[in-house]
Length: 318
Length: 279
Image (cartoon, rainbow over all chains, first blue to last red):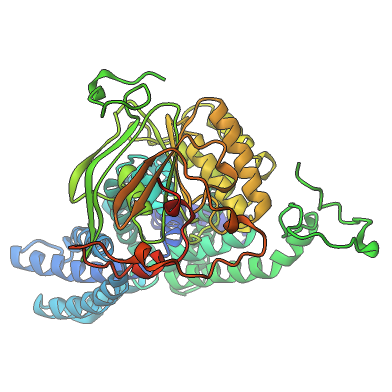
């Protein structure tokens, strides 16, 4: 069978179709949110939310078992969404109260989330094995209902993340100036927190809670190797996210490997390539003189050897 | 520049026009320290007001209250809603995790409460503002790679792009090299010539002295002078003077009934050009 036949076969497989659509959307949306988190130096926030979402999964399971819905994990995802949103809003509140304790609040979320999840799943009559598909992803079992939820949430994430880009940039870049400008800073901070929580729950199906943050952060790290503009960082990160998600998922169609782990390893591979390629790319640009073009504060005798100005970068301003 | 009638309750014999920005009996407490202790300040159209005072006298706190970053614990701050304030914070914010270009930073100044997205034609306005501060050719450079003086000018452009009625600058020339200070003074001269109202926190008048129409001096969180700009003592500006001598005791003794502020009592003992020269 030729390569194209294989591709056609993959694309006509309904399981694969749903999984690919989910991967595409998550790959595009997660790095958009990740860019704001990296800008705020909150790269690990996604991890903290992910851990709390695990408690939400178990809580949903517990409620589902109590109410008697079937299958018994039907409420797991709604539980994760609720817990993630509550957790990220709490983090934001703590961050506002006193900046230094934000780090501690994250740590509490990490441990409380995992412990709560394992504890609750046991009470619900499950085993920690039931949590594995949430911890490491289960994209190959995406149902049509899951897909609809993924599409809706991804659209919300992209609409807020891209639509309010300048406002969210302003708040993340210089909160004091944003306050002075009269921007609704509290609302915008909450928007970032809620969108981050939604991203975590959407990406949970693709790469799993333990690797969610990687999908948000690693593409941003790749983009930063290649550009120094905020907007281009976000766009490039999103493209990288889509490419690694779709490529990683496709590999699992032929190779029996974990989709989540494959996607993350691919992303890190791209980062390494970008980091190695950076000097090559930089050399193509004209040499940049890091010193500002301003006259000296002190009078010095002209150095005859350097007077030629071969670099051409040092003209005097005014 | 027309001022709305709602603020016509001016404080009497002062330059014409209702204040563009006004503090009345403002007290600010930060934690356990009582930083501002009943400050009145009004900036009227066309004025260039210098806010002077020693380190810890409350200059930055006052400015941060005026622009709405801090909420006074007593008293009130008034900025008529129709007026736009262009705020230039003291320090370039600690580098964020994702680099951004000068153009992107300046563009964020275009937003206001009713406009959370960039307006049409934003790029032209951003470039105009960068041109005003002499950085037109740096629009696409990462701000992190610019010099301190250039970063400060990017922040001024971010305030100017709003087309503010009043520009509020917090120590714009602190720690900035001399050529950048001259560049800053040139920029300010042309802005003031165009009729911009300015409130600027300064350590010493320096290059801006010819522009300043009024000086307000703070000490221990109170206004101790509000009027003509003080003349700096000549010996301070002489090259080679090293600004290390403490001043006579009467200048630093806490006034009766007033607890000494830990924050600035030591600093107040050192020279402070502006406050010495008050009438």
